[in-house]
Image (cartoon, rainbow over all chains, first blue to last red; front, side, top):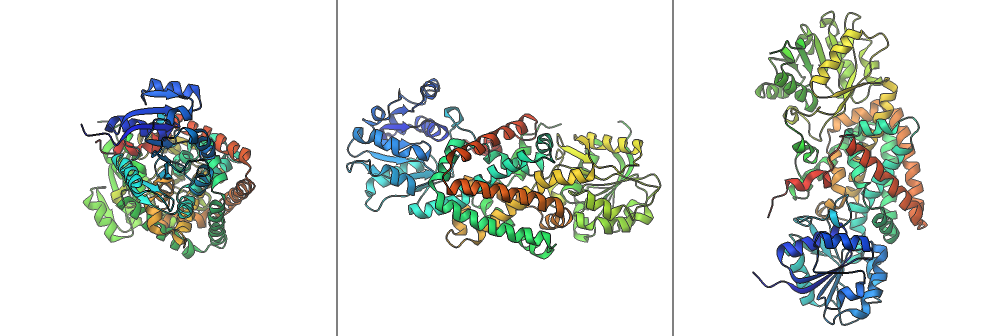
Length: 309
Length: 309
C-alpha cells in the first residue's frame, strides 16, 4: 500500500460532493484519517452510519485542528461562516480548499478570515447529480470530470501541486483559472441552464390550459430533461444566484436577446433563420461527446435500462 | 403465430420513427407485408439494407395502393404533399395515420386531399431520441410511452380501435385528444423545451468572453443536458415551429414573463423568492419518475455506463 497523500483530511459538509469525496478517500486510501463535520446532527449521524469518516463532530473548528487538508463543501452562502469558525483552529501549513460553484464570492467571504499560515486554494469540481445529501454520493462522481482551481496570486506551488494530485487521484482533470473567468464560464455552462430549467418547469406548473397530469404523461417529448436540473438542491441554487449575480444577469440578458430573435423568426415564419440555428447547435453536442463529457447513447442511454421483451 | 393486425402496411418516411415502427412490425409480426417509401433514393437503399420492409419505392402512391394501414412519418411541413400524392391510390377502407408533432396543421394539410372512403386518424407517438434517419430506429422506442390520437368527429370506431391495438402492440399507452389541445400540450412539454435548448446552445456558441472549448470541457455542470435536444433534426424542428406557431408563441410569452420575474429576484437578491421556485419544481420531477416517464437513476443513469476501476 502506498503512503496516503495526506495524514488527516477534514470534510466540512457531507452532502453529495463531500460524501463522494469521503468515499473516494477511503476507497483509494488517500488519507490516514478523515474527520467529518456538518452542522446538522441528523446528517452527521447518517454520515457515521455510512462510515464516511473516522471521527464525527458538529464543530467545524474541532474537525480541522489536526487536518492537513480541509475541504469545505457547503452551499456557497455559508462559506464565510465556515471560514470564521475554523480560522483559529487551523494547523500551520494546512491546505484549505472548497468545492463551491462560485469563486469570486467564496474568496471574498473566506480569505479575510483565514490566517496567513495556511494555504487557501479555492476549487470547483465540475460534477454532480440532481440528488443531495450524504446518501447521494458515490465513487466515480469525479472521474473524467474537470476540477477547476482558482489559486490566489501568492499561492504556494508545492501546496497547489499536492491538491492537484488529490483531485487527479479521484480521476479528475485539473485546470487553473482566474476566479472572475471561472464565474463567467460557470454562469453559461451551469448557472444559466439550471435557472432556465427551474423557470420552464415553473411555467409549465402554472399553466391553466394544460394540466399537470398532461405535463407529466407527455414529458418524454423533451420536458423531462429539464426536470432533472430543476430537481437540484434549492439552497445550493439560491446561494449560487445570490453569489454570482453579475455574471448570471449578463448571461440571462444575452439569452433573452437571442430568444427574442428566435421568437421573431417564428412569428414571421422565417424558416431559413430557424433552420440555420437548429443546424449549428448540432456541432457542439458532437464535440461534447467526442471530449468524453457525455454519452453518445441515444437519450443519454435511458433505453439501456429498459427491460427486454 | 397469431394473425397479423394488418395485411399490408405502408410506411411513408423511414427515419427514426418510421424505421422504429418497421422494426416493431417485423419483430411482432403485425403485418403480412410492409412497403417502405421515402423520397430519397439513398435513404431507401439504406432501408433495404436494413431489411426494414418487404418492398421499397420512392413513389408514395405506389407504396399505398394495397395498404390497409398507411403511416406517414415525415416532417410536418411535408404532410400536405404526401396526402396529395397518395390520395388517388388509397384503397377503400384503408386507415391513414401520421406521427407528426403538430396536429391541427397536419389535419389542415392532409384532410382536404384524402378521399371519403379512407379512415384518416391523426396520431402522435410521444417518443424519440436526438438521432434521426433509418439507422437510428430501434425496438422499444414506443414502450411505456404515450401515443396520442386526435380523431376527427366522424371517425369510424372500428378503425380507431384497430389503430389503438396497433400502438398498444408496440407497447404504447393510447390517449385521445382534441387536436387544438394536443398542440397546446406539446407546445409546453416538447416544443418550448427544444426551442429553449436550441437557444441556450446558440447563446453559448456566440459568447466572446467564454470560449467554445470552455463550454465543452465544463458542460457536465448542466449545459450538456440541453445539447441533446439541440442536436435534434433541424428540418423536423423548423417545420414544428412553422406549424404550431400560435401555441408556441403563447408558451414563449409565458416563459419570458416568468424569466423576467426570476431575473428581477436575482437582481434584487430576493433569496426567498428563488428558494420558493427552486423548491416547488422538485415535485414535478418526482411525479414524472413515479409515472414511469423517466429513470430515477442519478444523472439519467449516465454513470451506469462508466467503466469500473
